[in-house]
Every structure is written in C-alpha cells, then in structure tokens.
Length: 111
Length: 120
Image 1 (cartoon, rainbow over the protein chains, first blue to last red):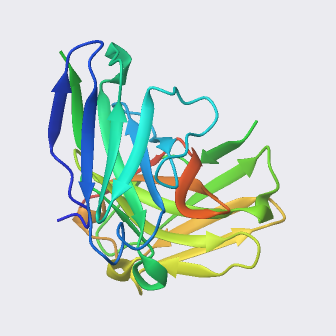
Image 2: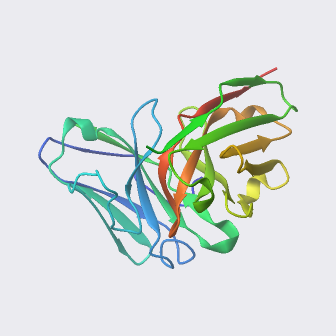
C-alpha cells in the first residue's frame, strides 16, 4: 500500500483536459510545498514533469500544471495528446524521518 | 549534458548481496544528492534512500534500514547502492536519480535503470 493515494486509471480524448489527484496526509502533502510529479512510459525511466507543487522544469510543456489544496495535490494535463499516454506518479517530501513517499501511480489512457 | 549511467543487470540468489553503481557526468557531482528508487515488475515506484554527494550523509527508507548502504566516490563521481540479504521481492529495476538542491523529492535526471533478479 502506497503512502499517497492516486486513482488507478484515468482516460480522456485528444484535446481534452484531465486531472489526476494525489491524496496524502498532514504529515506529507499537507505540510510541505514539495510535491513532484513524474511521467513514465513503458520500459523507460521516469521523467520529472512538475516540482514544488506547480513548477515546470525547462522543456516540459505548459500543458502540464500542478496545484495543491490541503492534503491533496493535483496534476492537470490540458490539450491531451497521444504521447501523454503513460503512467504518472506523485511524490511528496514527508519530513526528516520518512523523507520521501510516492503515490501508487495512475495509468493515463488517451482514447 | 547531465548523464547518470548505471551498471548492468544482475542475477542473485536469495541471501546474497548486490551492489549497483551510478556514474555521473556533466555536472559538479558534489553539488547534488543522489536518491535510489526501485520498481518491482508491474508495480509502482519506491523510494529507497538518499545520499549527499557533498558530505556522504544518508537517509534510508525505514523498511530497508539495516539492509541497504549508499556510498559515493567523489574521485570518480560515482554513487553506489548495496542491498544485502536479498529476497525474491527485491527483484526490481533499480534507478539512481539526481535530486534538486532545493527540493529533496524532485529528481531531474535519472539513470537508465538496473534490473536485479533474485532467484534460486
């Protein structure tokens, strides 16, 4: 059982927007603005898409955005494209004892 | 360009140890930390621990405490992860990842992964 809870799957049609939620607790997501999101295509290493809740690394499309409210963080992908089909993982800092926790992952299907 | 290149696949018997290397290039090695993340077949990502390449400080996931050791060799810009007393459920792809200085859970560059298979 993962520390952060994500939906197992989401889907959308090309051009649409989707949102993936990531629910933690007051010990991780709720306490720190240190939520990151990763995209992983089959057989590939994960890729950083969002860090510190809403910041995008250089080279990441502005179709990807992040937000947080309370103990829940969200990743929104607008203008869905076929290449966005992948697994997405959220990740949070969880303090000096637990340090880092991941969500269980969400499989995005572009219909 | 930043690169993290990991050692090759390993097959180990239960009870044995494995040591995976991660050679960094394209940046100042001691300015960043390295985390290790593993992924069992068909499963999600699991954070294993972190090491500062600056001073060697470490922080390990509680479930792996006592079985894992992370080290660095600054002379070769290489990080190592050793896992002992291997079990079948340690079978996974092991990744090293560079952590952003300001955000301990933000990994901007990843190695290609090393498959470790534990089987009798």
